Length: 409
Image 1: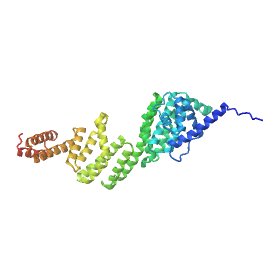
Image 2: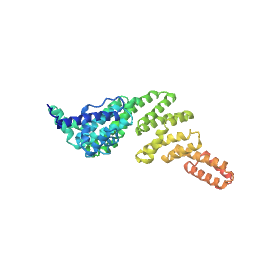
Image 3: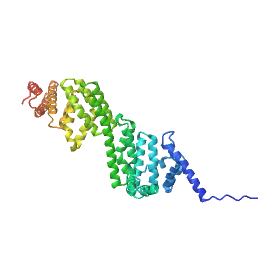
């Protein structure tokens, strides 16, 4: 007696596709996530189901099943999410959020946070999906106002979580705080990937800036407390270590401008105290610790008129540098930059005038057979020095040297 042949039903086809997508999800997760990180719930395989509804997605999935992950990776990291179905955006947001949590730190975590935020932004900009989701989840438990507020919080919820985790360790520059700062700084990348514009996007950008500022404020607060504790002591090792710590914090905080100005404001009174005490080695140590922050602030002042109020303070730090560098060329370069930043800076003009006069003297001493050329260069330095600081003692010495070399006024 022959048994009837089995009939392949649509339900069987759907079950096979679901199992295949769940298997592909695990393999994809193992490809993208750190070793040992548990994969998302099998329901996350819905992302692959939705991707495979397009011919491009089906080809990418088939290639991945054969071991070639490049097409699927490229699809997941599409330059823009514009036009994607809200259901797929929801899956992408959750998948990349889980991937960011798995990586915890580093470039891959930041990239995953950017992709997740981009998907949430695109979903919020779509307008109706999140509201419908809130209705189905909360039902009558939330008022219309509460439901609207909950929906508006969704796009930046992961940023808020990052901020909370970062603030708990910001004072010690912990990795969670660094991840939060770098993710906030990448908000423009998330906006670009979302492919959207409008009020939702503007709010997200404003919130990222605000969260970043709050995180920096926590860091500055910890530094302020440390400087205040050391403030009653004469400048010494405790201060030097604080400036070195501050410089490391500035680098950690992605060269934040508020940290630059904070450190320079703290350095100036200590620098003057060391200057008047002629403690050149100590003054140089402070200057070297803050070299990167000072140079960064100088560049900001050079390119942004709004930063001009800091020009005199930054110029003074450059003057301290000019007076403590071992090489004459470095001294002159620092003084030139100080005066370029703030052309009315008294100390900058005085120091630069002395250095120009010194260069004129050195030029004349090494003139040799090129006496005419040396006289011309020395004359130019002396004239400029006199414009900067007419009564400088070094200028008088340079003028005498110029006359002895045969120069004429």
